[in-house]
Image (tube, one colour):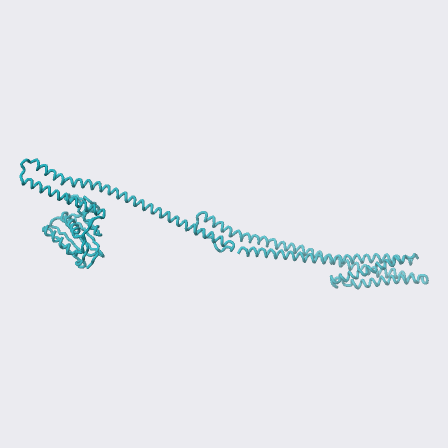
Length: 519
């Protein structure tokens, strides 16, 4: 998590800072100690030089008193002796401090030499006093003794002792200065080393911390830009630091919802396009159907007008011709009425057929159904047609599974269908050719096949065979309503009528009726 990385960076920086502060404190402490030791050494050196100066001035006064007979100021002598004693005491105290601080090796002989130097000074002073006391009695001896004191004790022993002390203390000062210089150099180099180590570490740590923050921000920025550009399948990695996890989850959830919304919008758009296309197609189909209905209506009105005009014209003509005859016989009137009756019957049948088709289109065709044996029904119809057309062979074939088949159907209407199909079979085939009627069961339907071996139906006519007022090219008898009526009756029973034909080989009409009761 990013918080831990910040903590790690802070701890690392704190450690480096702590090391630097500790080094500064240690350096300050060591520098202070070395400065104190250097001050002590400088003070000792100054005290030795002061001791040398005071001692030589006191020795000079004592020598002048002996040589030139001048009376020395005893107060000054005592004062200088006191100064010498104070200086020696101070030197002893400082040398003890110095030995404790620097050790015996660097201060070897300092304390002992001071004691010897003090003893030497005291001996010289005592010697002066002794020489002064015996000056009047033995001048020669005094002179030799004085010469020894001046040349041996003062010029040699005291000078060497004081110079040795000064040199020794000077060496201590030099050693301390060298130590301080070495320490300063070490401090400088250590500080440089710390700086050289800490600076890259801090820079690298800052760079690392910046990358740790910049990388997830870059990933989030790229992800949000992709989502804003419409790439709702873009998902941000959930392996980023904890501080960014909630933001990443929210952005991924937003992308998911946007993708779902986009998908739903696309589905709605496609659904709308599909529905519009479907409605457009339905409207087009309805328009086509309306156009066909209107065209058929016009054709129907024209055909009906034509079909009605013929019997009405005959009736009118027969009546007018008969009425113009002034002395027409009973036979003439009877023939005229017979002709009018025939045309009236034809006209009534035409009107009945048209009403049947109209009711069928409005789903108002009423059927008087009853459960009957379909095989017996067909046997009766084929026998009746065989009696009417003795010159033609009508054959009835019933499948074994269909012999006991019973259906609910309207006897008169189905008889009308069979009559229409048999009439067409006879009309469009030679008198000697057979007509085959068969009954079979196909799945859950009963199938009545009526096959003739006539001229067949052309491919251009077969698609319109069940339309109203359709007649074959070479046969103009009839009104062209039979097959349309047959189709309407079969469909009113919930069935289906089909036709197949090969020109020159006859036609096959198939009537399929649903089986509601099977025996």
